[in-house]
Length: 212
Image (cartoon, rainbow, N blue to C red):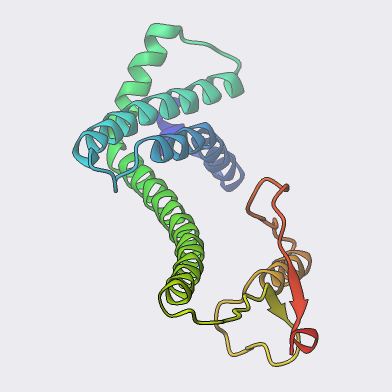
């Protein structure tokens, strides 16, 4: 293993192996945060995706070097020694070369997950935007009919409805149901509840019985 090699080939017991795994995992935390930031800054679905691919390849190699240098430094600290910056750089470059495929796989996974979350959020925002446009177009058509034919009309655009009869067959819930479901799931499973927006937006809701 990496830790055994750094200690000169000494065998590692189970507890030591677990400590090594924990150390290597902790070293990837700052690299993961950096990879998420880079994925958001250089998305692969933009027109400049080719240039962004190059950026991510360079970033993956650089983060791999930094991560393995941190791992080596962690072993040194645990052993109460420091071999110098030149040795640290050599060791980091060595282990980056030997385990570059692992680092690239981890970076690609982080990049893919981040891109997927970003695409999902954009699709939700696009759906809301299209719904608002549809409402505006409907009002514009009615106003045109009134101007052309003198049509008297009354249109009603209800706010978000809730109450009896709402679907519970597994389809995507909306607003208040989605909010309640997130909170309940967070409490039962001890998960973080993520709410979109800045907290200043306002929504109007009305019970379907009152609407009818």
